[in-house]
Length: 305
Image 1 (cartoon, rainbow, N blue to C red):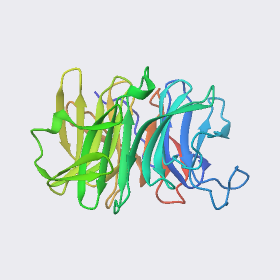
Image 2: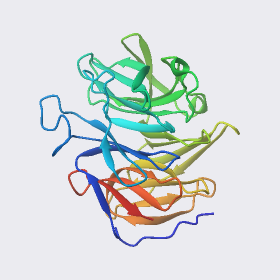
Image 3: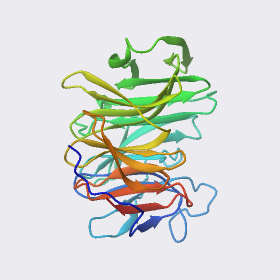
Image 4: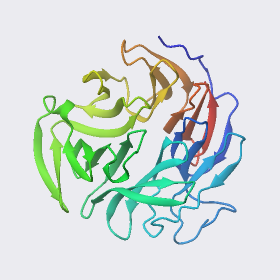
C-alpha cells in the first residue's frame, strides 16, 4: 500500500553541491554523495579533480570525505552506504583501465578492494554496482554488477571478484554472445540493455533495464526467489527503495519527467515529485529524497516527499 504524501512541484529544496553523480542515504540518517570538487573543496579545479565522496551529517553539515585509499585511481563515481560508517565507492580506475569497487571504513580511514575488472577496450561503458547491506567478510562481499558496453549488456552476481551469471535471469534472456575482457567472461543478452541496480536493507534487488525497447523495472526477492517484471511508461535513470512499505522510487524521463513511487507487488504507481533527475535516494524515514537534478549543473538537492 503506497502511503507517501504527494508533491506537485519541487517545493522547498536545499542544494548541497554542484556537479553531483551519485547519492546514497544510510540507515542512521547520514547522506553520502559523490560530486566534482568546486569552490573551497580540496582538489577543486585541479587536473586530478574528478569525483570525490561527501557526506551530509544528520545535523546538517556537508563535509568532503578524505578518500586516501587508491586516490590515484579516483574510484568515486558512485557511492553506497552499506552500514553505519562504511560505504562502498565504485568507479573507473583511470590509470589502470579498470572498474573498481572499494569498501571504505570512514572510522579508520581504511579501504579494501572488493571488485576489480579490466575495462580496456570497452566502448561507451556504463556500469552500475550494488552490494549487500552487510559486509562481514570484505573479500567475499556479495554484490551485483549491471553493465553495458559496445553492444554487450547484462547483469551478473559478484562472488569473490568473479562475475557469475545471475540465476533469476537464466531462463528469461538468450545469450547473444560472450566477450572476454581481461580475465573475466561477460555474457551479452539479446534484446537487453542494462540500467542502474540497487539493493535494499532486506537484500531485495531492483534494477532498471530496457527489454526489447520497453523500459522495465525488475525486482528480485532472494528470500522467495520471486522475480517481478514491471513495464515503465518512459525511460528511467534513478532508482531507490523508498519508505517503510517497500515502495520503489524511479526517476522517469520523457515529456513529463517525474519521480514515481511504485508498489512492486501490485505495480501501482503515483507521482511524488515532478522534474527530471538523474540519480535519487530516499531518506530512511521516507519523508525526504536526495536527487541529482538533471535540469541544473547536476545539483545535489534535498526534496520533501
